[in-house]
Image 1 (spheres, one colour):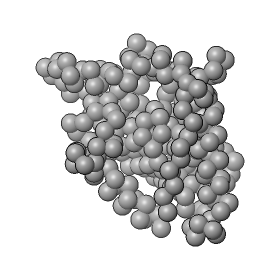
Image 2 (cartoon, rainbow, N blue to C red):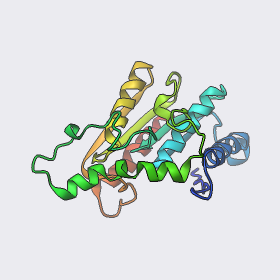
Image 3 (tube, one colour):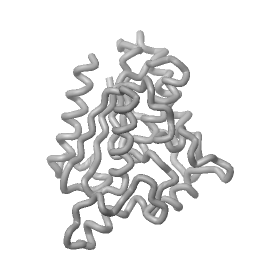
Image 4 (cartoon, rainbow, N blue to C red):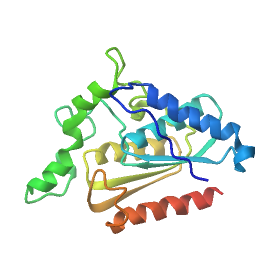
Length: 214
């Protein structure tokens, strides 16, 4: 059973509209498990980029409310720290990327998302929102008792450094997780599965993990 959430987009809908919409779907699925003929304690969530942020935040809220309906999460280059940018690196470092000849296309792909941080904050957040709120920047959340996690990253993506750090955070919290970094690709190519073998393999890895949950 696959359910796609058509969550409200910013800037017309600011935080926490998308979070609330996604989490309400998780609760609806759990509450209608009999009708859907599914196990309400084996819900899997996933998303890429902003969707990865929302999937993880749903898992955190599910844990905080002690429901533990979410058994697995697939986070495809998720946005984990809204405070970080190229101009304000927290986890990011240019030295973490292999671009020995300073290729401009690679450089642009590496920095692309990180150069949009201020725009994204203006679109998504309200004036007085705390950027370190774990439901906004989930890298700052307590990681204990979160579900089994797959983190997928791209070699040439600004978000890769924070994702690597988050895998270390999950390890310290004894949360079972895997981190797969696909070479030769950049942010935003998850849906290129008819074109890139890496994108197709992402789907196969997620499917393989979900099979172990059930």
